[in-house]
Length: 246
Image (cartoon, rainbow, N blue to C red; front, side, top):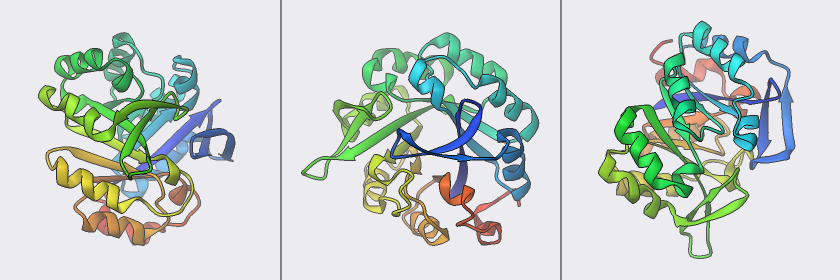
């Protein structure tokens, strides 16, 4: 299993939100470029970067910082946050990102996103599907920064894109994000069972190395960790088996 550190940017700063709530953020006094470099030095091969301002406005407000990370870190960078046009997507690919992350648009405009998967290649596009569990335990996809229901289940959404070769899905259980309550192992096990061909990235709730080991045991391809790494809850010496570049 691959571990992918997360760097969330807001107004040029590295932050973490609690369950996507912009009013409940923790600011980390770390230079984002230096942080990415430190992750590379620890042995990570990838980094997940979210432009939180862009997610709200649709403008790539932290793009200079992200471009600096792409140039300096030697990491495979995947970028998300407010990417809503082919021009924006192409701009990031031209800048050298490994993968572009598409969120709400995958629910709102499935035909357009299907065209992108076909045009740019499924290896270049990650669908970020953020879910809440309904009263029956079925994962329902949320949109617009988790503020609106997408009126579609996680399974329905993924099925929509199978015919165009969908490869990468980043799934977040909203209730676990930033909460340090442990990942939703059952949800990710279901996903792996239903879609073994998908390169799944799990996000939300990772507290420590034991959570990562639990995700690894179910055969998860990749896990994203933000707060646990930033808060030092996971020591670099514990990660050796997960770091091919160490």
